[in-house]
Image (cartoon, rainbow, N blue to C red; front, side, top):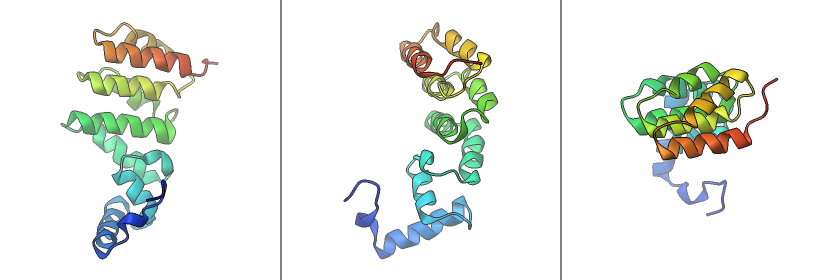
Length: 142
């Protein structure tokens, strides 16, 4: 299978799955957008439903869903979603806090930098490392 294509999945069953994914994401979505969302790769889509779906999953019970939602917001439009990402930085889960640190690396504001500095002092090593990586990668606040 070629990277970036879904040729290996072109079967009647995958076509049925694609129709279902498009219905879930929204009728105006393309199959590629629906597949990207289903695969947790929202950076490939600027469709508004990706952001909406990610925001709705920020309050999910499953830690993995919350972390994926934060990552998605960081990939789709981190600056516009900064408030939600900052809130996720206080999540009880280290996985969600680490995802928030990574997402904040794309937000060029003083508030984002302050949150990253706070996460650099987190009790969890994974979160600290993510915050340090994000600080190195982040643009300077104006």
